[in-house]
Length: 296
Ligand code: GUN
Image 1 (cartoon, helix red, strand yellow):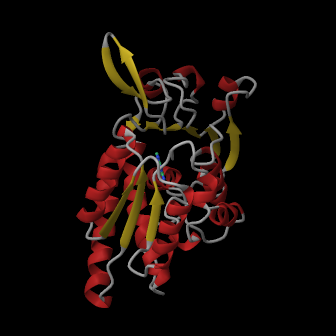
Image 2 (cartoon, rainbow, N blue to C red; image 1 turned 180 degrees about the vertical axis):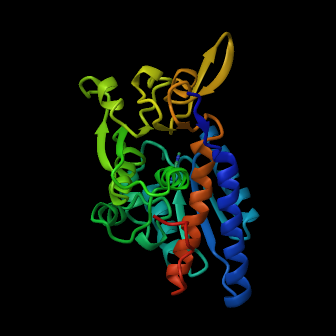
């Protein structure tokens, strides 16, 4: 079997188009423009690229983008004061503090200062609790993107065996909660799991989010399974820089029914879902109906 390739780049473009259409409608009918504030502390080069891309995508779908760049030496009180200001600003519907923060800043304290209704990353402890109890919340962007791709491919996920490899707060745990919410039978596996290959082979849906290059190989994939590769690992091969996932693509694609590539799979969905979450937050703040198909 050769797997169907799930084109995340094309799917993300469709999601951004749906967001843009909805933004245009609420601007026209209600005079409301959704706004996203992104806070970057310091000069981490990867974070600068992410923030630039987020700004460009936000503008492209017709939203307001508010960028706040602070020096690496910014103190906690100053950062918290900025978040308080953004929390109180009615033009700001979503707030994202780019991670990682410089070491002297307490990330948990900072993230939990964001108003939960504006927490478009879904990292605030209130949103984590709401998701865990099946209540309406802001959902972390990467797992939301994975869920959208899985729903698009399978229709209903009910009754399917899902194995999530990775237990991070940003991907693994919320991914498992979302799959449970869609009535999958969910296993969370990780680096200490006994006989990981055997556990993975039970999966109709296999989500790899471990951060280890090409760790999931074809022999760990059930024939016909859907494989979602969340990993983005920069490696050097044959003297060249290369981007690979947590899945060994060639061997897995020979066995799977469907698979996301790296690059061009999950990656583009993350920013698309950030925009979707900002729109959702704006609609909730203004008592408007939520955009269909763009939430969990
Ligand atoms: N840094 C890398 N990915 C992310 C993300 O999804 N959200 C935030 N806030 N920071 C990040």
